Length: 227
Image (cartoon, rainbow, N blue to C red; front, side, top):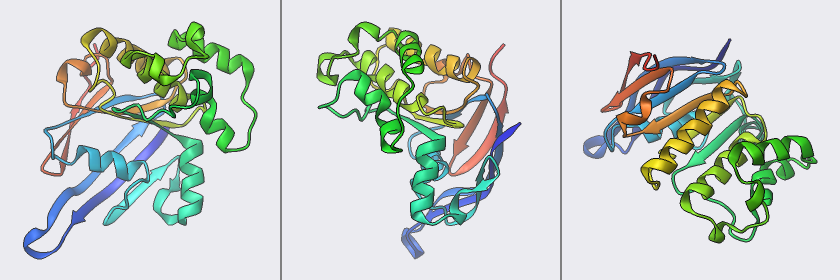
């Protein structure tokens, strides 16, 4: 089942001599439960691609469909709500709320929609993340790896159709990086969530289903990486 459909996506910054074509006619699709990595050098356009897919940046032209919904045919308010309910974000810098506990940070997106968190789902999430005994800790009391696990839990708790991970292991050591990759892999398999991850580390692509490469705004499909 097709979840994401990107059609002829272009993004241009500036004009004239200062014009930069960050994305050039990018097209691809992702299926439900597919774990895909986007690789490329710094400045290649991969973060711009992720920001457009997440509705955080407007493309210059082209279309992005999530479960058949045209993301940029919505007004800003509708797109914000749609994004919150259907897209989970995992950032390199964690972006946790420092005054909230582990548990409160994870359920924060649910509360934003004025919904009551499911206690059983929260308990399962804490167990999967290995954070049950840290549930009442503040972010400042956690290691970097634990903070990123909280961020992943926050991204998954709403059961989004699409999870976007921007260099999720960039601030972590090799052990914590592997733990994060295992959690994202489990999200795609156990929860059947589609995961699109940006990374500059080709070593982290061994477990993904597909590798997309971006260079100078042009996307190439390297195909399957997982054996």
